[in-house]
Length: 380
Image: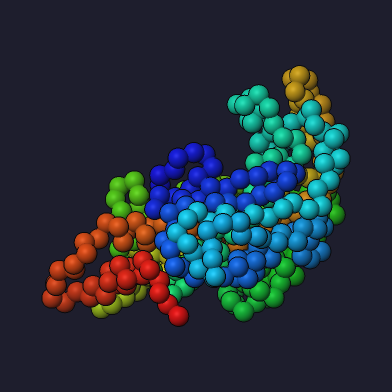
């Protein structure tokens, strides 16, 4: 995955995010966009609404409308081929919440590493290390989703586990009906109780998110360092709060035999999906399945031991408005990063493929034709 700077993601489609938690605005610039592609601002806003704080009693009470605006690159509902600039102006900042700890390093945050690396840090919510930066990713990923939809690709996510309590059943329709976005209505009460208990104790809990990517053809991703699963892992691990990634059977594969783990191949399909939809770093036509370990929210109200900027030991209690579990609000961020990685791989594949496709008996090249024709996305 090529990038020009620490704030740039992508190769064929380059996304640059900008802004700080308590600055004027947060946003993104998309470069490498083809002209004439459809642009649906309302769909982007819908994705941002899923990430927005203050949605329910299990999330931070901080109120931000997160209204996205387009500054450039779009005319009459279509892209112009020039960089698209998306911006959300910050509202509801309360920097006074951080005044008492401006000279103290918060455990679990990037305070001490930013200070040691750069010699300065934005103590008001963490600056670029703040979770608020992720709204720029969501806005960019929402546009990438719009381009993937006509190609038959869709991305869905849910939380497989909260506070160490795993879902035992899988009900897609339940995910959108509960604030934790978990998939098991029978286990949900216990998961909710665990989050509430952590909140009341001024503590936090983590979770395991799961993302399914449907409709990918054979052939996305390239050896050796541009494997599709490597690009997806890179994309997701760039999100603050994610501490691990696994595909398919993941870490369980270490406890399996080859005869159990290998996905038997039948005519047109696989009998299982332990590979997670990727073989040799290349999509195999099956659903891509990955799971993300989401750490507990770092900002908690309990007393913790730390040091100040002078190296003196002290204690800290973090005030302010924080989520007792960030896993629900992280889902649209993870989907967005997967969408950006997939769309970037799709565009890269299109650039690498020959313009004339050789005929091979018994092999369906229609997916390649779809990639090539999909460059302009002239879909009504």
